Image (cartoon, protein in one colour):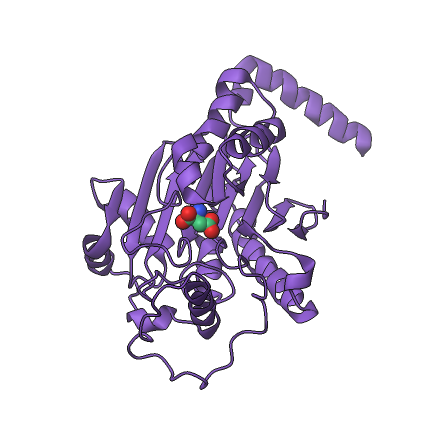
Length: 356
Ligand code: ASP
């Protein structure tokens, strides 16, 4: 039997060499990496239940993306499917559970990029699409633009037939309490509770996850994926920075800063102080190091995070993937919610710095 298989393989190789059949793309192992934000996430800041809840959330996210890839779906579809789950999970700072501006509003940013053709789409400051990542994809696929912001982006998402919600849908008590705490600490005025949300005390904030003052300042969500066809994609979705000025736009919807994907180099999604990520063009910078300098992916992400970002005194992290199946993450904060999975392997997950 073994001999027969060997002979067949040999014949196949010979036939391939003659007919050129091996010019076809070989099947790739799919892979996916996700992050749920970087920041001051210390063991002491998470109760055991909190720790468990975040890990369960990451697990749901990564399996949502993996299910798409396993069926032969595209990296773009996997990125969108995984981010959907992040956006529906109030624990993460994207979609429901997004942080508030200092005026008490949820203004969300998202972007997505297809490494196979460099097409990209983004929305900034949206207040109503239930899934900002799908709004970003709609900009890419159904408009002539790459980025649409503010009320125009809300209106576009609605006209594209996406699921819309009233602003009160995105409210969570824990984010609100976190905002109030921060504004009090900074001596800033506390905005009125948003219209249409439960009165104070009516709902219990989700566990006590935010004992650390900085815990929720970060928490952006991001996904990078490699599909069986060998294409890569990246997407990022966020409520941005807690207590940001109204209208502030971070790195997440900016192609090249918070998100980038090219089959020629890599796909990257970032999380951290967006202003630094924009100034460094972090996501594109990682890919440039891979493309122009031939750096290994892990070396490239470590260089950008631990050298370039730190030199500017910025903080945060990235996840990244290459078409040849290199997976990497790097962060200079005490923690980053993260997980990765390669076809046929086991989920590798971490929150704190001292995990592999
Ligand atoms: N990078 C995001 C922003 O600046 C925040 C985050 O990653 O948590 O909007």
